[in-house]
Length: 172
Image (cartoon, rainbow, N blue to C red):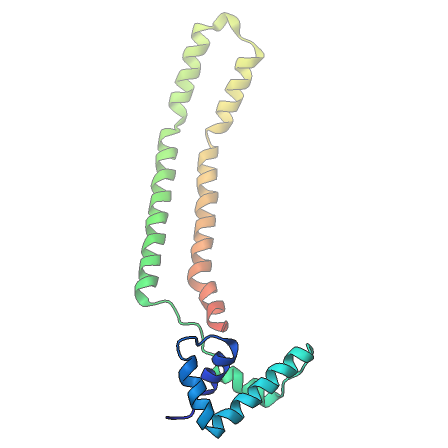
C-alpha cells in the first residue's frame, strides 16, 4: 500500500474517516514513515492546544496557503439564469411603474373633484380645500417616485454587473 497522504492522516486525527479507520490503523502498524507523520501531527496538535498563541512558521503557512483551493466560481448557466431573472424583474418593475403612471392621470382626479364640488357646492369647507390641495400635489409625484425607483434599480444593476465581480475575484 502507498503511504498515507497528509490530508488522510489529518482527517484520521480529526475523526473524519470512520469508514477507513481499520485500513488506516492496519497501515500504520506496518509503515514506519506514516507512523512518523502521525506522531508529528499529534505533536503539532498537542502544541497548538497547549499554546493558543502558537505562531506557525512562514514556510508552514505558505505550504498551507498553497493547498487552499479557491471557491469555485458559479457556472455560466447560473450567471445567465441570474441575469435573465434580473432582466425579467427589471421589465416587471418597469411595466408596473408605467401602469401606475398611466392610471394615475390628473384628469380623472380633477373631474372627480369637480363633480364632488358641484354636488356639494354649498358645503365648501377646509376639508375639501385640503383634499384639492393634496390631490393637486399627488399629480406629479408618481413620476418622481418612478424616476427615483429606476435610478436605484440602475445603480443596483451596475453594482451587480461591474463592482461585485471585481470583489468576488479577490476572495478565497
